[in-house]
Length: 197
Picture 1 (tube, rainbow, N blue to C red):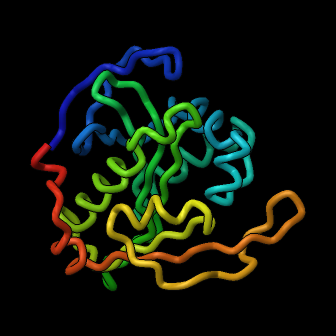
Picture 2: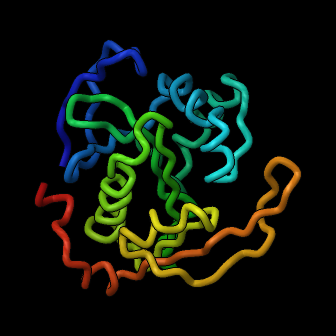
């Protein structure tokens, strides 16, 4: 399901229309383009994002190079999360895709001003519906700081355990919560699917 929408707003200057790869309850997913590098760079430079998803901010040049490199990578799909009015609010991705085993990892990052409004849950639900409803995945995994764990549990992910002291942030070691979602668990979820939006 694709749909053309224009990008607008102060956060993202682009004259071209964006084609939605996937649409869900309150968000759409559009493939990341090299023109999104400045926006992603700003989001990744936010200290809360760096802490919650365990990233180290890169230079804008490195971000552009990564987007160009990843666009040819068959093991990952990156999307901007867009509101119905085309406002970009985050980034989500399916990474480490292994079609033979039917496994992939889920990533999600929201812009600071758009956290706490339910957009993360909707984006995660949309990505999961894409992975299980249109792609041949059987198992999705995700890791996050233990304090951010409720975000994944709200989308049906089951906590498998803890990676102890797996992340260094501001001189301290932090645990990561490890989650997974299997296709039968997704099928049992009592919520509308992205294609019902």
